[in-house]
Length: 82
Image 1 (cartoon, rainbow, N blue to C red):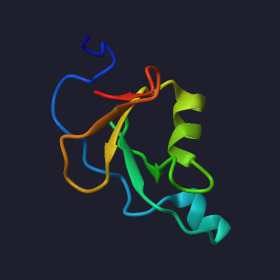
Image 2 (cartoon, rainbow, N blue to C red; image 1 turned 135 degrees about the vertical axis):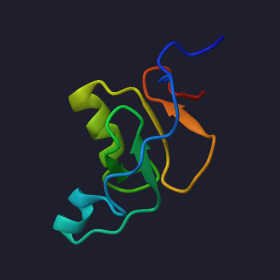
Image 3 (tube, rainbow, N blue to C red; image 1 turned 90 degrees about the horizontal axis):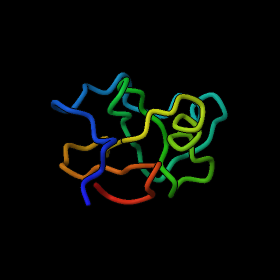
Image 4 (cartoon, one colour; image 1 turned 45 degrees about the horizontal axis):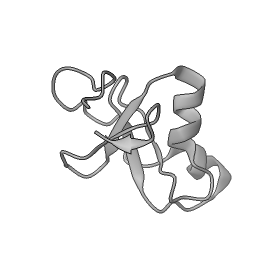
């Protein structure tokens, strides 16, 4: 079943090349995700602090993609690749 949360249009340009919250904390991240609603870059669920998920919970921006160019997209609402 298609996900209704996938944003129409192309990939947004990331607003940063790192997870700003992790930088402030002096923490490392395992992977970065880019919010498809606003372009915010944050660490993935594979990272200890999971800032991309926190961004979704704060903003309800449901879909993110990897920082590296990819067609892979994750829907936080449905908890699955879309």
